[in-house]
Image (cartoon, rainbow, N blue to C red; front, side, top):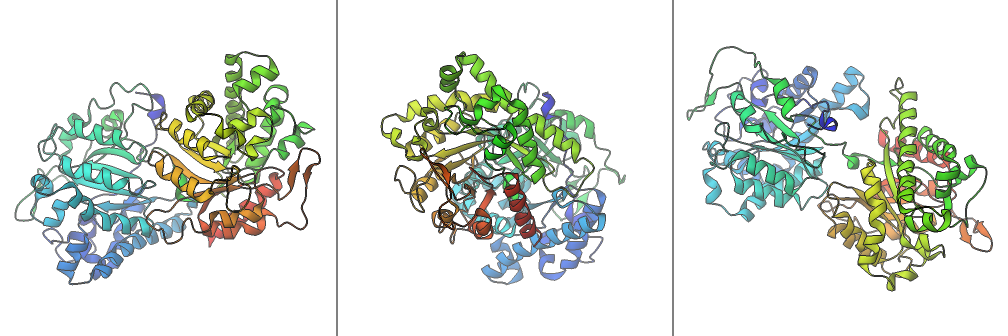
Length: 620
């Protein structure tokens, strides 16, 4: 198995009903709402149960909503649809409160806090006839009916702030496929998909477990963080999982697995667990399961879970290098060859100022440019791009070492974004600010032009791509199509705009940006936005994109310039009393900005101010 797949596993909580029974006297098993009834009758017991699991070492706790459905709560609690939905909010709030109190109690850094998974049991659990263990209903209900049955709970849990979703005890192929279709409506939601199985080979409905699980994961690899099995005798787990990752030779092949079995008993029709033995210890073959791929459930930190501070512009690099390269056809990329030490120093400046994400110095690094202006080969050009990633990685390594004993630093785990400027930047005629070339080149040409740099940056291991200063719809659409060739890649897409309404080529910004976001592969575009623009235009560009859109929220990215204007004849020049970017930060965050930094004429000092503003808001 690949070395990179050997990551620390995430520990889930235990069986909620078993632990909850220590805090309540009422019978739980056999109740048509199971533990969800206590959302109405005993929230203190739910909170105490969450704390029990956190204190025992759980990295992820689940809301007690496995058997909570809108029709079920309306029927058995005699409450309205609105009141039923409000109980989902209560479930997440109780879990969140337990997490907050626990990290305060143990003095755990906020960024290391346990996560909350919204539990989503199968349709069969609502039927209260044991059919989640046989999957008999799968042939009698349509996929669309299953989608609409799951939707209210999924929507409510996500709106309440669950970090991810736990689709569990799914007994049949039909329901698993319905869940995948539903998740496409929530492209930034992450979930694990855990099945109900009858033995070491088959799901409850008789389908082959491995065929179904692998197909489901491959369908939505950016959203399904793991597939596996739960509520099963531990003896069946190894044969179910064995072989899934046996031939995995790359990260793309590897499938993360999730498992949380029962004690080895069975559930009777009278509503009682029949234990195989009286031993209260599980004695699970954990090492064996970890070797099979049961591991960290989240493939990477949810980048969208908080505001990310980007770095500033090339001004910081020019300061470290002792001169500017404005007007140079390679711009800052020339320093990859002439002054790599200045690049390393600049990355460190931004990290020390508080950047969560630093960008490689590859905005204007292209094969065409290097071949023409440095007189080198294509392969030598690609090697320079690889070196750019190495310099960023070295900076992160040095910085991480510097802060390893300082738990108060906010940017504990910086990410690296591979910077990809537009085709116009390589033309060296300012057309990245006009988009004039876009009508004379095809979408296929633009895809072919961007592909080598994108592929090289991804192969070198950047965390995300920064597709930036894109001046026209055609190039943006070409990028969206190109990224689909790299299904595990994530990127933000940032446009070059000429005012508060239009792209540089005159296209409507909001129409183009939203269309690109929706046409991208689910979860692939982390944010859309703008860069290298005067701060005064940003609000009008973004205003309205996320108004009344709780279901289809679109994360935004912005890193404007200082407010000065660049001309070929005079260089950078301040225009009157133009406001700085720092005056707008709260306003932009309210509009849905999740990535914020600076572009031209901004430096580490600006990043410090942004970091302070974001941290202040985050604490509140």
